[in-house]
Image (cartoon, rainbow, N blue to C red):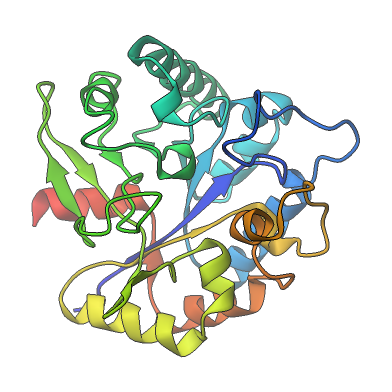
Length: 276
């Protein structure tokens, strides 16, 4: 039996970089997310693939036709929060407000309330933000995709496959991003700079190993990765590389993987896991 994988897109602007002073603010006349998402939608249509789009509430509000267009193309709309602030910097009340505010807007724009969530920069943590998971469940979310098995931004010893997290409000499914285990630690091959930096054969082999074990691979993409010539914030060289990656588009590699493997939405994978 073919194991479906999931392609996920974090719908945010090129200037949504975590950890900077204040909240990211639109730079007038320099928004590029709509054109980049349109390129992603065209690619998915060519490859007849469906994906999950984790949308920032502030982006959905500013570009009110964007989310309806994504949904009309048959893709899942999920929540990326409202402001792109790290969850570790929010109080429980602020987190609930962001989640609810984004859910309300996405429901108005599509007619369906989102059931999936991803935190900016993988900033949920079972030790530091244990209160976030029951809030998500109470707000109607069935799954989260925020726990990365990588050092610095997650737990390098964390599970690499889907698993349930028990909360006082009920279980919530967790879908970590793809990483490649090595003797030196997990490599970030599932998205971001690592997706374009490491050889494609490593990503193909990692997906294949997971699928043979009956596990899905979860890839992630930012719209700016389809826009390598786009603007970048003036960051230190290391910070810039981590935030933006190499100056090459993810399109060719993504098209290749969509041709090799089956991809679906995370909502579909939740249904599969619930009935397995």
